[in-house]
Every structure is written in C-alpha cells, then in structure tokens.
Length: 470
Image (cartoon, rainbow, N blue to C red; front, side, top):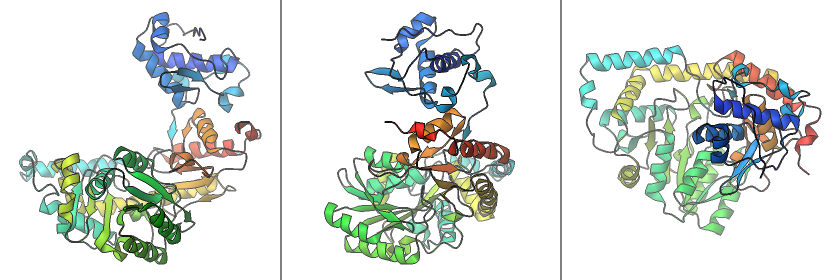
C-alpha cells in the first residue's frame, strides 16, 4: 500500500479540497502513478488529524474529477491523469480550489429558470392565502389519482400536447419518474421483459433494475425505434411492455414520423404490449406528429411533467391511462405515494388554467433556440444532431476519442457532459458520442459559451490519440 502523505497548505479553509489539490499536485509531479492505491479513509484521517468524513468527501470529489477510481472492498486507486494535469510543466501550477472556476454543468437536462418563475410562484402562493384555499391543502386528499380540478388541468395540459384524454383517465403524479414508476408497477411484474431504445434514459435503466424488470434494447435508425426490430425482439423475448420516447428522444433527438408510430403501434397490438410513452420533451418539438398513443389508445400510457419544460422544483406530472383503466394504477400509486403534494398540484393547476404554464413553455422554446444557435456557432465543423429548440445536442466524437475519456477530460477542465455509455442498455457497440445539455445547467449565455469553447478546444486537441487505452 502506498504511504501517501499529502502536504496540506497551512490555514486551508476547506481540508477536503486541500486533499484534492494535493492529490492533483502529486499526480502532476509523478509522486503518484496510475494504479497506486491510496490510504484507507480512516488511516489518512488519523495521519492528518482530521475527520474521516472529510477524507470521504475528498475522495468522492477526486472521483468526480477523474483522478481516482474506487472498488468496494478493494480501496481507492489512482487512474491515468486527465490531459489538463499531464500537460502541466510545474506541479505548483495546479489550480487551488479557492481560485478555480466553477464547474459548468452541461450534463443534465433542466429548463432555464428566471426571476419571472420566482415572481409567478410568489404570486400564486399569495393568491392561495387571500382566497382561503391554503387551509384545504393541509390534509390527506383522496382519490389517489388526484382531485378533480387537478385532473382537469392535467387533461388540458396533455390535450395541448395532442393527447386527447378525459379528466377521468388522468392521474396526478410527483413528476415524470413517479408517473413511469406507477405505470410499470401497476402493469408489469418482476422478471417481465421491458423493451426500450438501445440508448435510453439512465434513470429508466435504474428504475427497471430496481423493479426487477429485464430491460432489452431495440435497434433504431435515424428516425427512431425500428418496428421490424421490435417485432423480432417480441418473438424472442415474449416482452410485456414497451418504453419509448418518440419525440425529442434523449439522447439521440430522433423525432419519429407518423408512419413509424403507426408501425410500432401495430406491433404492440400484435404482441399485446403495454406502451409507456415518455413525452416530457414533446412541448419543445415544432409540428410534432400525433403521439404514438393515438394509434394504440387501448394499451398506451402517456406521461408528461413540468420539470423539463416549466421549472424543475414544481414536481408535478400527469399520467394518462387507457380509457377506463385509471383504477389499474392504484397498486403503483399506493406503493409509491399516498398522494401528490396538494400544494404543488394547486400551483400547477393555477398555472395551467391561467396560461402561465403555456407562457413559460413558449419562453423556454425561445431561450433554447438562442442556445442552440450558440452551440451551432461554437461547435461548427463537428458532426452533431440538434433540434431548433432542443434541450441538448448529440455530438459525434472524432475517431480518436472515446466517450468516457472525453467526459473525464472535459470534467477536468471544468465542463461536465454525459457520454453515450450512460444511456446504453448494453455495453456492446456503443457509439462514441456525448450529450451536451443547453438548459439551466449553464446559468447564462456567457457561461454556456465558456463551456462550449472548452469542449471545442478539447475536440481539436492535437494529441487526442493518447486517450485510447492500449
């Protein structure tokens, strides 16, 4: 075991950051080499006279920066240092945390929020207090699917997205993930096969694994999931469910044409598949075709939420069930939440009824158009998929780059992105691409441009072949 003895600056205000800086310093100087094992948390804490929790925090930050890897039961090991550290000539030039630029998070899709959102929320809460509605929001509420007013508002929201559904078939949820969990818990059982795109949302993978479902990826082309491939997998696996995102697919940004939707619906009907249509990004798509659920309404669950379009903190979503099947969702509702918080649902209903939600959706599209233009300008010359008002771009890396290496190097330079492996249902034949989020992770146009410039510079790095192991 390496007896690493980091030298911490005297009077350092943040000991955990001082450890990270010392680690970067020793990697740059060659004092620590790839593969070397760091001291256990408790041992290093005793040696430095600090709390074990401080060392734990430092090691976690070092993992985020790409300096180390950890294996449960084996310890923490130094890995190949990022390019920004390998290029340093003098170790003392390692940036200290107090002077480091804040990281720009382009790894997470989140809407841009403004002062206007805060003002609208304050107005809604004030109105709740003046018209005596607030007292009614403090008790348990039944039915579990939501109060009638909230369900009517949800039906209006979904109707604007092309999902024409009655309020009696709408369930109010605590966001899109909650809606998906309710539908899966209520319609599938542990061990069932759930089909999805070969590249799908990381949280969908987590959710399927947690529920004991067997997730299988369906091949896609530029227009989205292929119906012939879906039919083949249904015959091989006896799948019971299909999770899909036909509009603004994340990460590929595919928008499936109506012909593809009709074909998928026919396959689902032939094999008796439950369809779960994830439509959180649909409001960002101009002239989107009719929802997939419109072609197989008797077996389709359609979900949307405020969190990707309006504001993240208003955790409200709406789940449309096939006609007359809302009662089927009681199992999932009871297992996950007694009810969606009435205060949030009340605000969401107010915003839908007053037009505030539609107003913010329009502002979001307008802002994302500007941000997509910035991405097009700074990443010109590179191959990427984009939508006029898309939440992200899907960038193909030059041949010498691996996605995991690019993500690590970008993070070391202060810009976080997400690589294709995070979306892959299986590890084989994963394209080396990255998703660059253009939304609220960058708080301003200037910050977004700084991140895009960092990525562009990294893409053209002359010695990028060094990132391919072996």
